[in-house]
Length: 111
Ligand code: SF4
Ligand code: SF4
Image 1 (cartoon, rainbow, N blue to C red):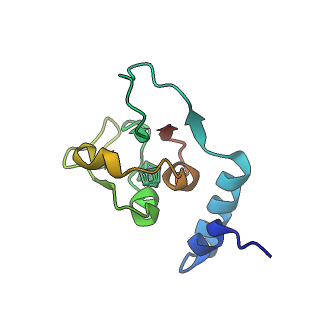
Image 2: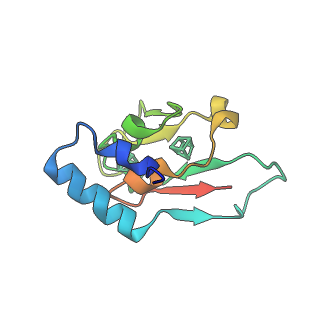
């Protein structure tokens, strides 16, 4: 039987976190095929809405490529939001794990 790759994200999570994960998987990530500012590159990348982010760090914890970090500047609502490491954007596979994990639907994935 084929193994569900998402099963790994349940390791070391609290019941509350598992509930959020299940809700997010059910809703599905926000994925777009064309970014308005796209320049023709075929690279996947993400866009984080920093004012929507509450700094829970789920996306940072679960990005398999460690491409997300905590911003040094707080956002409009006082949280230190997640930010995509633009310098390493070519390493993003567009796997959508970050968007699936985000409880605030603050991440969009572009492929
Ligand atoms: S799409 Fe995947 S590889 Fe890219 S930032 Fe999100 S979790 Fe990381
Ligand atoms: S999972 Fe969402 S709310 Fe949490 S730090 Fe990442 S972008 Fe912010």
